[in-house]
Length: 124
Image 1 (cartoon, rainbow, N blue to C red):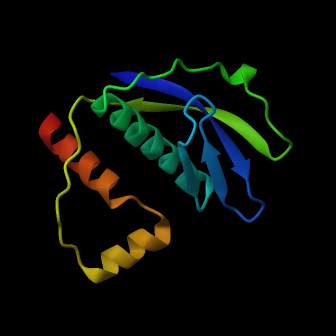
Image 2: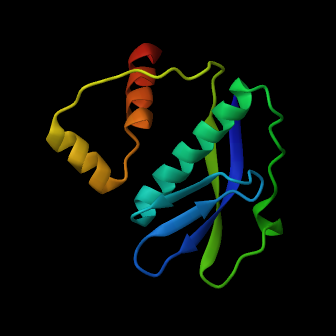
Image 3: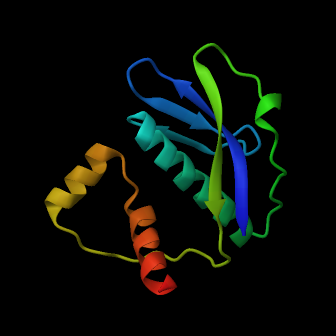
């Protein structure tokens, strides 16, 4: 199922962004750059909605961006997430240390990368 929610981006004035979802209290992420913040916003939204789905909790309706109040250092952007039913399972994987260090440095979610790669592989 496809979802679109408005996310509030707070410019931390050091090149990083904090992302919150007014309709999803507790759904928070951060990005080390604008591009990374956009990626992290999508990842956080998808994981949050998957959790709500897996736990059979109500998924709140999305607000309109124009109805969300912002401060001077904030803006709102819509974020899309495709959510498939299916409870997440924990798997252990091994990667080279240099890849792990680069992922941490970049703020990349390894779980999200693996899910995206497997999703592409199985969509063929």
